Amino acid sequence: MTSEKPSPAVVFEAFVLCDDIRFENNGKLLLIGVYSDIVEVFKLPLQLRSLGLAVRAKAMSTGRIAFNVTATDPQGNSLLEASGDVNYEGEPGRTIWLPIVMGPALLTTEGSYGVRIALGDAPPVHETFIVKKTAAPGIRAAPLQPN
Image (tube, rainbow, N blue to C red; front, side):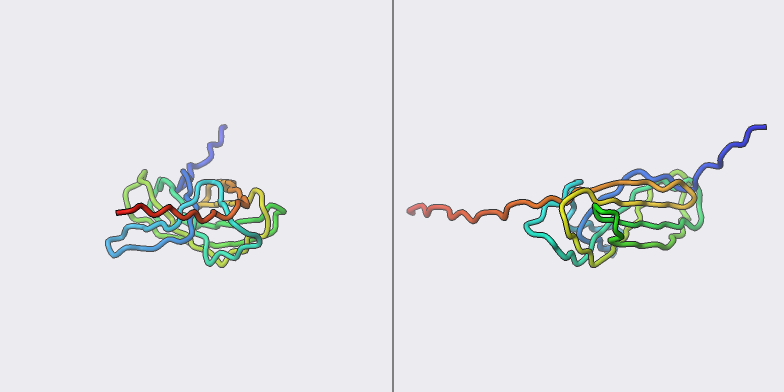
C-alpha cells in the first residue's frame, strides 16, 4: 500500500521585496521601492516605515488559502510577522499575488535576513535578503555652460 501525499492547494513561486504595496482602483498592485535581494542603506540602525512582500504563487484549487510570513534578523531574532487568509475563487492553476505589508521594521545590522513563507498546507519556503551598508552618494555640481 502506497500513501501519496496530497498536492498542496497553493504552490509558492517567488516574492518581491519592496517598501510598500498599494492597490489601484482597477485591481492592479502597485509595488513601491522594489529591492533586489540586497537592501542598501546609508546608516544602521534604520527604521523602515513598512516592508512589503508581494508573494507570487499558483493556486491549484479554489477556497481559503492561509498564509504566515515571518522575517528574522541575521541573529535569528523575530523582525516582523503577518498571517491571515485569502479566499481564491478563480480557475485552478492560475497565478495569484498575495500582497503583504508589515511594519515598521528596524534593520539593526548588516547581514542575511530570513523570510519564512508558509502558504496553505504546503511546506514553508525559506528565502533571504541581504542588508548592506553603503556610502552616502556624493553631491556633484555640474559646471555651468555659457549660453
